[in-house]
Image (cartoon, rainbow, N blue to C red; front, side):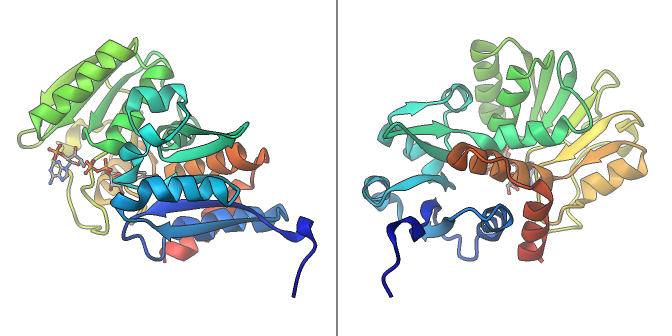
Amino acid sequence: MPQPADFCPSLVGSMSQGAAGNPTVAMVEAAFRQDALPWRYINMEVRPEDLAAAVQGAKALGFRGFNLSMPHKVTVIPLLDGLAESAAVIGAVNCVVARDGRWIGENTDGQGFLASLKEVIDPRGREIVLFGAGGAARAVAVELALAGAKKIIIVNRSPTRGAELVTMLRERTAAAAELVEWRGDYAVPESAAVVVNCTSIGLYDAAARLPVVAESLRPGMVVADVVFSPAQTHFLKTAAARGCTVVDGLGMLVNQGVIGVRHWTGVSPDVGSMRRALEQALA
Ligand code: NDP
């Protein structure tokens, strides 16, 4: 049955590859429901060769923005009209926002992590150990550096990828950066205030162990993991048992969603209902 024009929802979405059952759909739609917003968030599977047409199509269909997962986070950049500061430094976009008819690329992964971390510690002036040098590590490291972290030690298995991230941090941010090639168990220096796992170790595997000397995790340190399923990784359980304050990857995922909804709608959504919807979808 035809509906009056103002019944048409505003549309946002996610463009992903092979992400059937994307749990963020339930999370974002819960935010819209909670605030009675006439918006819809739709997951669309887009093949890499179709991305340009999909981005153009989203504009034609009046979409207000969309999220992107890999490999689209990088290949979308030439298709956009502009980039926010951290997205330009990171070289990846996970959230696109329509502003005055222009597609602007944001990177809310690192911002989501930062919001979650700031609930327990301000990284300004701190020394941080960060495991990994992939997409999540780049986003988190850049955001920590832009938030005033003093020094970031990148610990990565592949020295080439690790060196690329360290060079980028040195050239594009004010933070000091150092590379440690990861061989065997890494001992976290006493001077570190925050330790973050940005590798995929532990994803969908509660028993997977991060190669780190457990005794080097000290009470008073904040230990975070970007892995969101399971939320309590082996690494976080080890850190909690050592008396560290822990921050899980669900907080990062929820907060990147919160920032996206705010960008698209101008409304600050209810974080609690988004987290509950995400937990249910993941369960
Ligand atoms: P990438 O594939 O880009 O990077 C993976 C990183 O993990 C690399 O640094 C890789 O090291 C390292 N790694 C993987 N396996 C091992 C291993 N066995 N030993 C040592 N190092 C290893 O992945 P992403 O950065 O995109 O994703 C990383 C994690 O972040 C995933 O679990 C993802 O789900 C999560 N994530 C969470 C988000 C959230 O909102 N909570 C948002 C985005 C991502 P090397 O360079 O040597 O290969």
